[in-house]
Length: 148
Image (tube, rainbow, N blue to C red; front, side):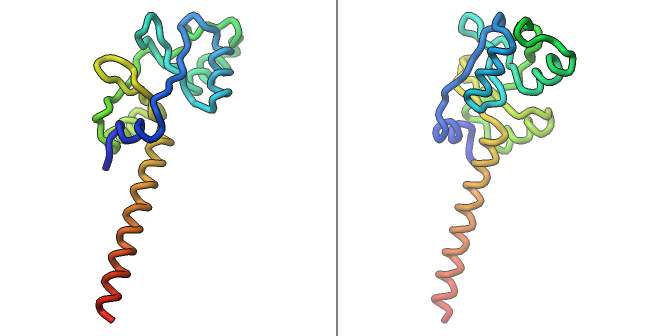
């Protein structure tokens, strides 16, 4: 199985970020515009948190807070689980499953270099399975041709 680097090489490492002082409405619009489920919260070049759809749902919507007057810093997740480009995909999947999260920022030398999602992992696993099936089909077809 591959590494997080393989996913970033395929999808790119563009990041969508917000500032802790931004309002949640602007952050939600950014997420909606880019069809993403989370944004990294950055201040002075460093990651200080992550804001996810779940954060907005549980800490803004469910509490009937005004997203225009609520600051990202008030509702973001501060303790952010991360991975490295060298992290194996099965390790990243295990962390996501056990911690019940869907996004992992990727750090390299304490610098955010990308983000992977459970969808990225599913896509990578699908590609691996398709490749395996094709290889097996070719093997079987080659083997049966020599037996006839």
